[in-house]
Length: 182
Image (cartoon, rainbow, N blue to C red; front, top):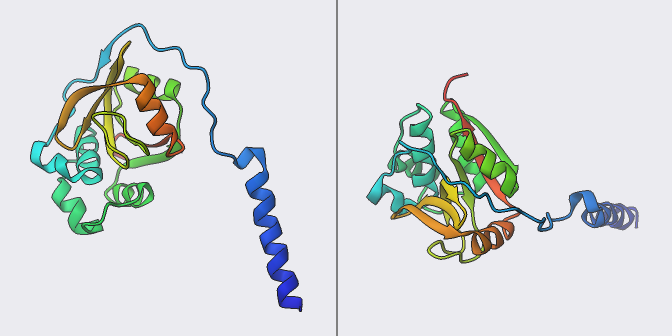
């Protein structure tokens, strides 16, 4: 009986945390599409290696930040199965990169690009040419959409509305990798 009470108490605590608005999924907020265009130059694109999705995206951003690596090395370390954002962050930290895994927003995304820092996002719904579950490196934006590298896509524009919808489906999960040196 005591064990049942403990289990119910734990379930009740989890339920209250789930119902707490501070723990709720981010809601879409109004977003003013930027009127200017930005593109971060010299972000590498690994072509065939980029076919590896998450590993290709991580290799591109780490290499851009002065920590050259390959998608093959990341796949070898993490396995062929698509890695979680957490696994990518842990691996990159182990390689000496500073990584933040955050639930971002469109304004923070735009600010990162303005600062010359590409970020990795994951989309949870199709946003052509991105597919559900794809990882993409955001390398720019313009009034029409974000500019991404993903799989075999190099500097492709994804319209704002489908991109933001697909990104929201993953709670706006974003890997921000800054500088390679501690």
